[in-house]
Length: 311
Length: 114
View (cartoon, chains in turn red, yellow):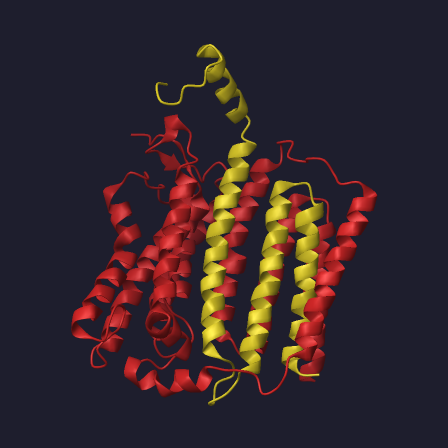
């Protein structure tokens, strides 16, 4: 039964993936991509990775879908076709890609048991972090440096997106309202959903310490709520030179860095926590990160500023 | 065949499909979509490795799982940057603006002074 479900899911995933590649219309391809992301989330649950499933559903499908749908709608008029490859080259590419698939499949089939694993070590040291969720412990304690650098990558990506603003719109606001026509139903949902979304995001960030969830997932839900109210025109998009906004963007990484350097003096080293305060410090960092992630992801999806703020 | 092996085969198919799309599809936005498909395949392979490392009462090795979470977020950031670049590239007046600036400066593109 379980195997039949898995096989069905895999056939769907591969079939939908192939459909996305061959379908002609860009908007249709993007919608297929969103569906694909949701199916991927189910695949992650089947692989016992609930934290990843939540991330995939929120980021991989939800916010990436919003971003790509907006872009597809705006590119509709533009002639972004480019030239198609000739048939023989396409066939050669298909054969080479099939070979790569075949070799990866061989690797997947030939992997030996017992598999190498760090799970016992992660569980052994879990007490010292005060956390109950081993994935959160990896993200914020064992491999905290990765998480810190990832936040910096997010900020760099945002700087990259902003730097694409035309000169006249620098210090302006991203225009979200041109991609989505204002409609009553959207404004209605933008007023009803955010209270629930915000409570859910706070819960997700809080419970991430001991259950699946965490700052990434919570922050993404917050970002989606923010995008929703901006798209519906309930709240204006902020000017990118807003001082508060910039503080929100750096608050999470900054607190993470401060806590990291404090670790040099009160614990074993950079990004180490004293066991007695580990959980409190990690939850504080997660809370600040959730806010920063929400601001960064929301602005990344909103795109570069395009016009000056109307006074 | 175990769940992990089945999804391993799935991930290899997705990587191939995604790579094919990146190479063959001329539309830049579709290239980004295909690249995300390729990325999903790679992430899934990580998930398979994590699932195989199930031990100590956990359903999977938490280390690759955490890496995938980081990867998904970074993939989104890269996608957002790529989409912004594509939109700027195909903006109706973008090309003209650069051209007209260049002509008004006597075909001399002087970024520092203008």
